[in-house]
Image 1 (cartoon, one colour):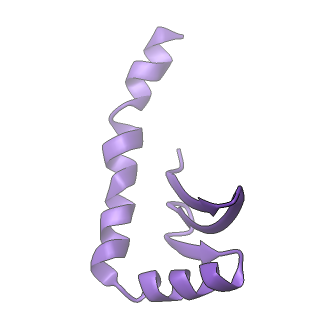
Image 2 (tube, one colour):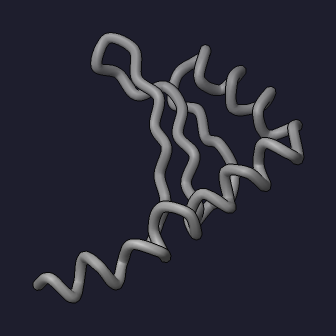
Length: 67
């Protein structure tokens, strides 16, 4: 299970947080700057890593039991 938080502008993804990578990754010039800034904030990174447990792990049983 992977938690992904993507940021788009004009249908173009410029920054993404992936729980499997554990940090933000930028895809455009602006996205790289944002990712560098956000990756320096340890509390933000730990909060985003915790989102996997909040959204994914607690709800996966509900989704698969319905199938």
